[in-house]
Image (cartoon, rainbow, N blue to C red):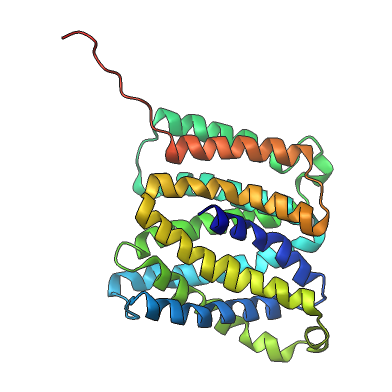
Length: 288
């Protein structure tokens, strides 16, 4: 599980390496989702997961596909404008907080005290992550892109919650990767192919990382881990993803994490833990 979460974090610097090759983000996203789609087939066959999906999963999977398409594009286009590690922390740390707000609104439920505290901490974390102390960068293209990406991933997470009630998570990932592949496929041939043809080994190693390792392998390990450990114990590993993004961005790209990103990320992880994983200890009556 630790390895899987680190591989998810690796997606961010690996994606920036591909963007630095000068290839169109549409082409990168198309190739990425096409490889993921194909690589899931042997996994599904090996795990004996049915390819058919029930009717009640159709609309959620369709929504996941749309959200996944936009998210994959946003993930790429913002990277030339800032650090991959910062992008990863903003998107990965804010999306669970957004998901809590959206899901609470949909269910029209009342927040628990710990959830209210967590969301308040989330607001503080967001202020640090977008570097509110410097108004000139507050509404920068970079911040807007990844805050919106976090919002999209939150919507995708909620759609996944409904889809996986009657379908296996891996089959949901399989079908949702078809959407961006098909929608981006025309760009693979209509946009300039020269940059793609001239890419070096680093581009294809990065592509292998974001597809086979970070998506197919890591996703399979994650859901197998959830099955063994349970949702609470297994889910807490997700907190490692932003940390992985920072570590690998430092190692591969030489990015030194900014202090406001470290502070905001730490507060956000605390907020996520409080909302999703913290369980208060029951009070026992000593009398009797």
